[in-house]
Image (cartoon, rainbow, N blue to C red; front, side, top):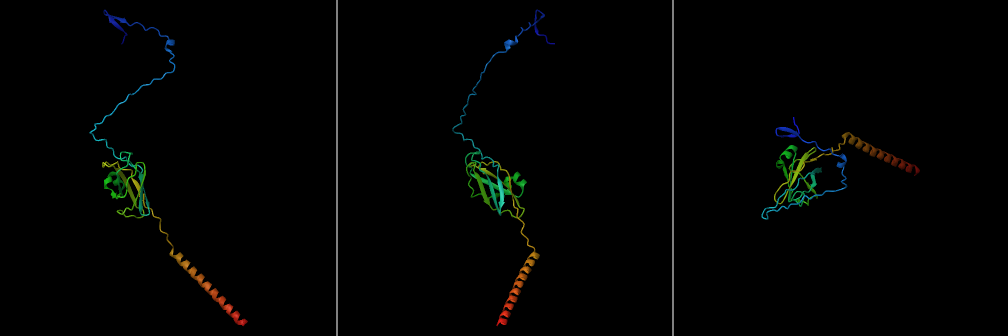
Length: 213
């Protein structure tokens, strides 16, 4: 049990009671006021002999792929040399018919030749068109693509999203052989009928001439 007080000469002396507080005294008119403070500042000084920090290009997140005839059209937004600033040095594009393989092991995918592809300034729209000769293309073929950029220090970005291109061919138009035969017979019969009518008309005209003579 706690008793507010103190011991004096072996006796417990209770603390004096707190004086009463007038509630009106607590209602102070503070008015309008504002308080500001400064967080200060700091300066970072790098060793002039130290190498500047190096950052890889940022990750491509909008890679898109589609088939047009037998060619693949790729498009994406260009990253930068350092994250999303500047211009990257090159691109590495790989493809596979196996989604899991490309996602789990990017380097195992088939390498796409990008020799003629020069990266643009960060934020620009990139396009690349090529024919995937390493993979047979037919109706229903699906190819997955992924890419990443590299900078001048050979630092590579994280692998992009995986884009999918599907080859869907329209079914060939099948002409029924019976319909062809029917058309041929109809045309032949029409021509024969015209010939018979023409011959009959000529014979009649000749007879008329003979009688009139």
